[in-house]
Amino acid sequence: MNSLFSRSYTDTPTNLPFMLPNLALIGDKVRNFKVKYTSSPHIQKGRHDINVPDYVITKDEINKQVLLRACLWRMKLFYNMNFKNKTVLNYSAQLIFSYRVADVRKHDLLKKMYGQPSWGGRSISRETIQKTQERIDSGTYTKEDKQLMDLYDSPTIPIGSEEDVYMYVVRLINELYETNDVHKFIRDFVKKYACVQVGSVQATRMESTILNVVRTKVDFRMPEHIIEQDSSIIFQAYYTATAIVREAQYYARRMEIQTGAWKKYWNEDDKEYKHGWVYDKLSETQVRYRVNKIRRILEGKVSNNRRNIPDGLPSKRYEDDTPQPEQEYALTLPKGLGKELALEVMEDADRKHQHLVDYEREVSSGVHGKARLIPFKPDESVDKAIRELKKSSSDRGVVPRSMHRMATDRKVFSRRTTVAGGSMMIDCSGSMGLYKDDIKEIVELLPASNIAGYVGYNRKIDDYDGEIRVIAKDGRMSNHALDKLDEWGANSVDLEGLRWLATQPEPRIWVSDQQVIGVNADTGRNDYLDGQKRKEISVFMRKNNIIPIENRDTILKVAKKLSLKH
Image (tube, rainbow, N blue to C red; front, side, top):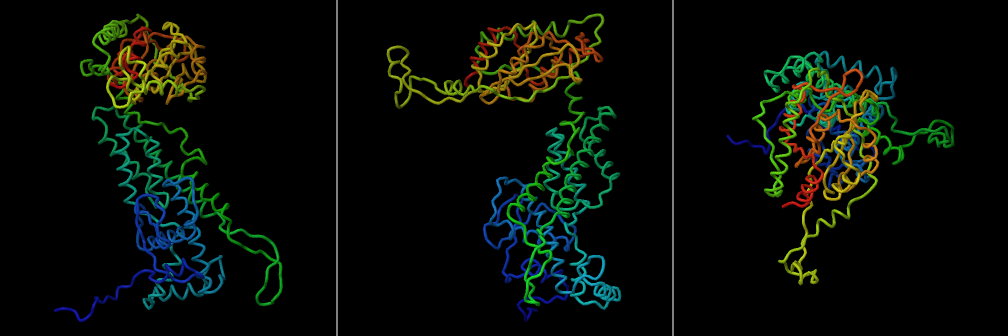
């Protein structure tokens, strides 16, 4: 039978139906607000739009109300304020600031509604709380009683679902084994949980969850100690991320949102000036300072929470260093070299590589050297070379720009050409015989490439056996790096140099005679590598398509061919 009424009736009470506008609009008239759930830090288009992050998963309806109140205060506080930083973490910092404001305004309202606190700094008198709780315990409470206690007991920052934390960590672990970026794991966790309390997640259960997921992600032949190392690093990353979130939220809960001063003020009752503490709202500069500090905490810039956390997982390095059957990998030359030059590169590389694999001394106790990566500090621009390479002449086109070439090659038309990239790692040891001018000539030919060099110390310096310096990047170069690489003569960090090169764009060129060498683990002095460690370098080079070239003239010819995309 059709209902006689336009809507069905229900006696199920809803939580805080009238509190949201009252709490947020003290001294303001009630308006209709539109809640918009978004996954990115959008600034609301309308003056009355409440922007709510849909990735903040709260525990229940009370916690959802806490989130909505803060989002409404964020709209009121920051609608007309522009921040240079427009990232998710800046949005989160504003919302964390708004949690504090909403909590203070909540207690201010409760004081006005239920009297001044009479004990323990509470915003409701002890008698009111006791009587309300007695009615709730006896079952004779009204809807307003329940709403009052829910509001009074609501947290400053909403509490999230514990199960959601476990599920999200599992998702991050799956992504981690694709990216091998531990710090991205931390950043992603902070972004999601910056605006919600993680809750009572059990450390033992989290460790067990992480270990179980790791076992499903690594090869079943992986040694147990490598699996345990992976699990330990991931748990450390999780713990670091939660510590960053707690630090930001703790700062917000304790910060002042009013500024006070001892001065005269007008007493409405006595109609005269009196002395006392007078509080006023924070200035825009003070608000910006607090928001920016919260953001910096979330970015990990205030404390040293991310110190000593590796960039990648041990299992990934173990896979890279584990020798594989040689026939599984083969090098591929870049297109456009030409048959003659390609044969020259392959024949010379094969001849030198045979020495790398077969050469072994009776006593070979060396290990792969550890290299320090020196930050790139450019001091010269090669933009002019890029501009010249972008110019290409042709005998076909629309508008002739070089009529003086009509009598020679008839290429009177100009066109724009894309400058090729790629990467190069240069063995700067004494046996290579490359001069600074030779390397600068390569940079001029390949100005858009990433070019670095490495050298060994033949001793320990700050626990390092050598260093890697970036020589050229993004059209800029560092003469200082070239000078420093010329100070040492060993090449005991070959594998470390190739690892850096493997992270750069293809084609990857290794300027080397393939005369690899290691170091004594204790003294850092040069020492020969055994066949197994030399083969590690061979497999790593093949696996990452790193092309070895030694001859200076061959390098220059290849650089000229690679300078423009074909």
